[in-house]
Image (cartoon, rainbow, N blue to C red; front, side, top):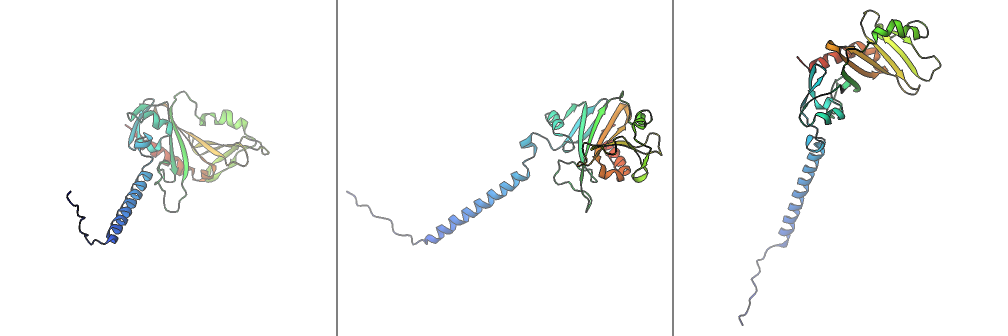
Amino acid sequence: MIPVSLPEPINCNPRRFRRLILAMFVAGAVYIAERTAYWTENWSSSAFTGIPTGLATLSVGPQTFKLPFTYMSAADQRAVAQDRIGEVSVLKISMTWPGLNPTLNSEASGPAGAVERTLSLELEHNPERESMRARLDPFYRRLARGGEMSGPDGLKILQLSARTATKTDQIVFDPSRRNGFIARCRSDSMSVRPVCHRAVALSSGLELRYRFSLDLLEDWRRIDNSIVRKVAGFRMH
């Protein structure tokens, strides 16, 4: 029987192995932390939600619009996410004021010190719909309780709801222009701030509707002009 001899000791310090294991553990922890931060930041990207981050081309009646997916409602996003082109009867858009940034973009911010508020927009092709301004004299004035009242920045107000009613219903309009600004501001109870509904007739029977808080009514000129210009920028000519 051949005798077996044990190998000679290598005189290696066991602390080196502990240091190596500790270094490997730290490197692994750093890698896991970096990957966790990356996937957390990109969790809402198209790889997980199926919603692309580029531009969508959509037709509303005879008009075509090209806009970032982040401006669109979730329902419209899902409808066109497959091929990035489609046709919708009503295009719903959401953006902030005063920045006019997409509300789905968490990094969007307005001017320094500005509080961003949400504006809800709808685009619909409906050439047969009667405008709110056309209903001012034959309808709203007859329903008004009392005469015209003065509103912010040159507006006039018609009060449709009773003074003791728990809800608010008002027509606000610009008397200086025949087809100027007009909106209906309503709430269901005194505890809820009224929301103003505005409709703008665009070309080719296209109607732009948007909603904003009554708190913003004093800035109605800038809001109206900015929204119309923003939507015009999405339009493909």
